[in-house]
Length: 225
Image (cartoon, rainbow, N blue to C red; front, side, top):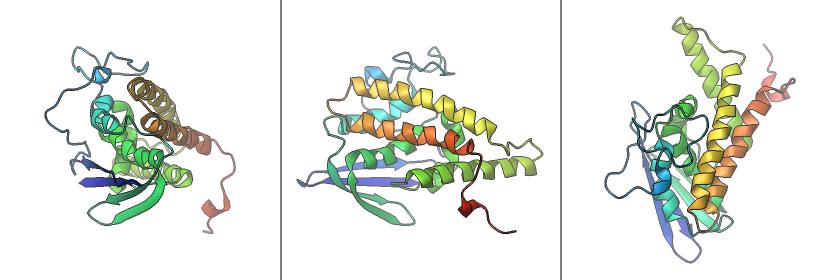
């Protein structure tokens, strides 16, 4: 599975982000070679909810996979307008948008497929990635994907979480993780494109628990029987 982000700046400069996933596991296929930055070490700004042990794993899996793309855009401003094109096997997407929006869409894939166990709950969404998704689309996709997982849990004799309690708690943990990654990236970026892209993801993450807690669904979800 390949997601190719082609980002073209008004001056003619063009950057490409190639994200390749194992179709069976949805894990990102790491690039080989090169040196990894200090900020990718697991113990460097380790988030308070991290379940990993530095003795067994030297690097933070998310930071390790973000190292290359954040280096590429470390000197870019978040509000710079770009032409962003995303090429997948099934179709292509195009949007004239801010660099932070384009990067946020790409970084979101890295976050959920890098191998961090705290992000596994969102990994199934990577198979049907929607570039440049709006806040409403993200909330809808996240909750729908999770409910489909619960249906299959039920079919396999496992206890489903129809009330989405575990999803809400998972997002609360992800918020802590997001802020830790933002802090890592901010320290090694000249300008704000990378960490503002991460902040957008964090804003979206905050809205899922909020939507779950809403007592009254909108009319679009109240379909006739």
